Image (cartoon, rainbow, N blue to C red):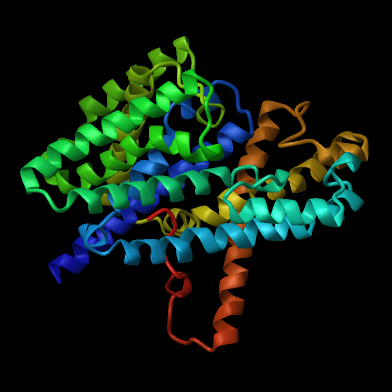
Length: 365
């Protein structure tokens, strides 16, 4: 019973972190001044860290089990979302969601579908799905590396795993300096692997790591100071420098661990918990959801209708309007996913289960 209660507490705490992660993502893509620079310092690294937190040692003993889980929880949804956007591409052009120059013929459609299968999304609405590709590669790399090293003694394995991950991290940084890309996202995954490992180590040593207000405030101040020196742009492979990326990433992660744990202890907020369980839907659908606010802005300010194709937002909107984009990006995907879950329950005639139990797996775990 105690183990079940601890597991339930853990799920709430991590779902809060995932909620904050997608909230920061929407702030960044909505270009809310100053806040967007603050959150880009750490929120991508935080998602990788969360995934590492949920990595279980049984996957090291049986990588096939882990790969099967990843296929069901990440790869198949990735294919479905990206293929849906590809299928709707020319329809989006017709209704002016896309600009006229984005029309695709059958040959281009097939080429882009093959790119999707290779984890290379090229559709504008799937612009954020590159992160799913990178997460899939990062987590699989960690699993395979752990599997290879499992045949040596535990003490040596610990040191060697750390050395290998540090070496892979530096090789990813070096590749970015040389402007060499291995697959669109493999070299990025080399850099992010250390944050996955950080999440794994945190779970192993969670009881020994102090989580207090003093370190949380220190982390916040560190991030605020670092803002003055720039910010990493991970998809563009601009990391500032290795210590900067590590410092801002782990400082932001620690700050959000503190906030999430305190919030979980203080109050169970079902809405935030549910949003945290549906981060993949928000990641995939928030750009499309932004179009609703584009339409609203066109109506309210009498803008030309071709502004609907503005991506990701209409840049002439005020900072107050940017918060409407955030709200739409959070709410619309969650509502659509809830409708889908309810429909799925009816189709397969599943009764007496919670909506979240119908999902194959919790995303980003």
